[in-house]
Image 1 (cartoon, rainbow, N blue to C red):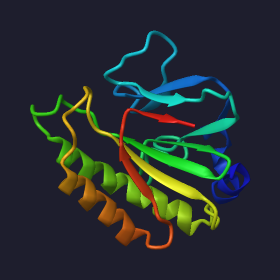
Image 2: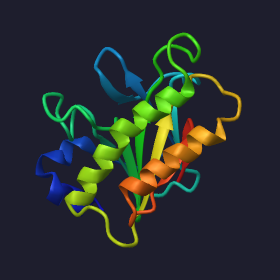
Image 3: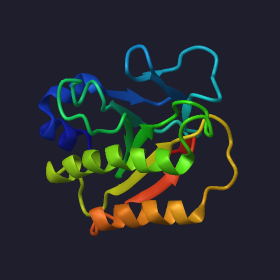
Length: 179
């Protein structure tokens, strides 16, 4: 998959990083306005955790601010992770704690507004093969929240199914992904 991504995005080599770590944590840095690796103590409220218990090879892509520079195309997700024939697109929508200014349903809708255009561009550039498994993840809450409203989750899944009828994109709202 890496070669197809680099063929589609020749400038993207510094944006793609190879890993074998058992855990990699990323967070949306408000100062640098892009996702970064957490090297110190874990922040359970802000860190998205990539769990790799078998130590297999995987790659991360800094999408926002690297693969797509800040001056281009404002609608893009923050990050992506891929291994074998699976790619997971991640959008951080944390902002204020839920209930202060935005609710989870609004954040899911905002995240989809950035995940869908990114997935669409990867599809248009021929990055996906028939066997590619595509996932979209919205990281929308700092704390564990009550079970999500099934109506808003179904609406999000329906929106992805409509946008990508042949890809069968899986949608999740989570703080981690195990490889």
